Length: 496
Image (spheres, rainbow, N blue to C red):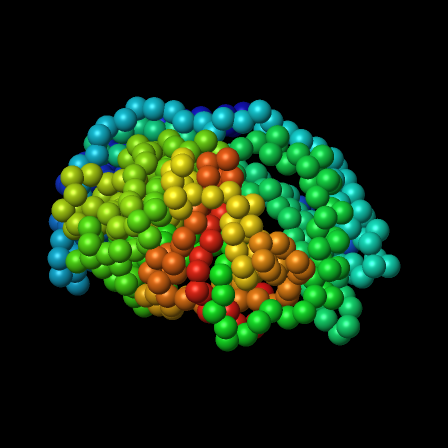
């Protein structure tokens, strides 16, 4: 009788890898052994169009030898494969050193033995598929009940991930993490007068369990969303080539934060590591502590400990503990997003924990963490509620949701659209517009903010689809923010 092979514990494989890395004489090395369970359901009109339920597992080994990186990965988690992959990573490091001009150096990091699990109430993967599918179909059916008024298409989705990883390094860290993520939403499209316009609603992508789905909330939004899509398709087009006041809801503002504050302050981008793909950054290190990035009442803070944040973890993928810090304080550029390599180059004593890899087969790189706009100071002269901003605006445009966008290779010159637009006249919202875009330069835009919302209106908006690197990796992060009012911004007509 043939005996089944003995299953080797993940921590034993991690320990084997670290021992081999040390024996190879590397200055540093780490291993991530990961399992990713992802599930996505999508319904279009009255049919379930996609049910994706997959698991991916494997490990990646990273070594630093004579100042050069080597990385290799495999889906086979066996002792024999650990030996082979570590040797391959070491050989790659030796090859990399032949053409590397400046040796890589890393800031120090503390050693941790710890476990982190996303706090959840309901494990999304224990909820029956049928229950999830029925929710999506009921949303679509309710949207399509407006068919006679013009709603012709309905789309809804649910997305979940569970990320389990064991991280071990040559500085004696051994960290186990389990990260849960949930994200629901829906869209409908109205057609009339040879035009089609959509309106969407989603609960923001967060690190939370199935309790985030909240069918009651989703279903309660359908009537409003359908009615606004119908109104939008009959609305006049937005103005073109004028300057106007904008009032931006968090659901729109988060993407502007992401593109014009998050990406420009990734220190690897600043140093040119992305120059051949997604560009560089205008926020160069000679401007640190000097650049008036925004108005003095504007503060951008990173926080990887934020409850529910899409980028919230216990530790980054270099074993650096999660933390919070300002990138822009009182309008001034004061810091960047770093990993251990870029922090050393900047002359810092430690990384602020922004290393992330989207797979066991990907190498960690600097990624935007949770990065948000702080609420205005209580009683501050530039602090106002959304209602107060509207009441105090003679002529402007209120924008909700995201649409098209573009930004140049240095993250300086941008254009953003939205999902819904309303005219503001003499302190009142007077009707919808469609196809609105706004255009500005990053520092001009943020220095034109003259009102910032209060803490009661702070929302956790964000994205689950941020691409970076070659080959491209996908990351996710929350950009919690409040409404703002921005003066004298160029408005153009286009596909919003």
